[in-house]
Length: 200
Image 1 (tube, rainbow, N blue to C red):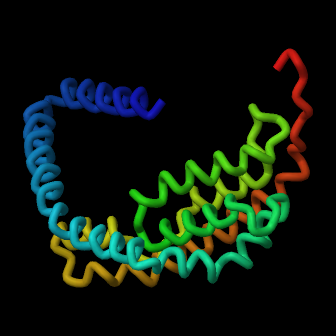
Image 2 (image 1 turned 120 degrees about the horizontal axis):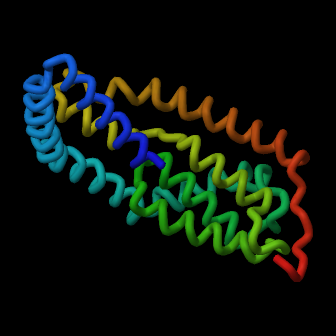
Image 3 (image 1 turned 180 degrees about the vertical axis):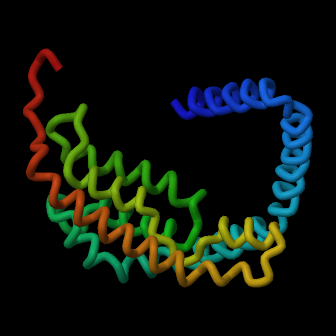
């Protein structure tokens, strides 16, 4: 869908520029911004490598597992449908911890595994359960303690203090996560899971 929107915007821009006699500006803008995109991408390599390396150390040192244990009471509260001490809760806690620390590469496989574990308790296999929806809402809200990618982009763009984004990011993503959790919990009673029939 996004592809169609981008194509539409490009075509409309080119057509309008053509009829306004500004095609040379469009061509120049395309060339300049393509060059800028390559420069930013290359300059990101060093900063991203630093942050990802730091986060990998957090993962290997057991920091993520430690944080996962700390937030385990919260995950028990948010996912009452999942039995306590089940592997799914541990995976959810680890996924949230990894995302919070910006270790997105490590968080993705953990999140997929958590979904697979939650599927064990799903009686209607083709429909997401309440815990699955809650987990997805939390992931989509994207709570972060260290926004490594944004810091890297700001640093590559020449920001004097790229880490100043940390406090606003924590505040906004925390609020977003709270709103997402409240919304999903409030909406769940209005969308009960229908029993699966043989036709399904």
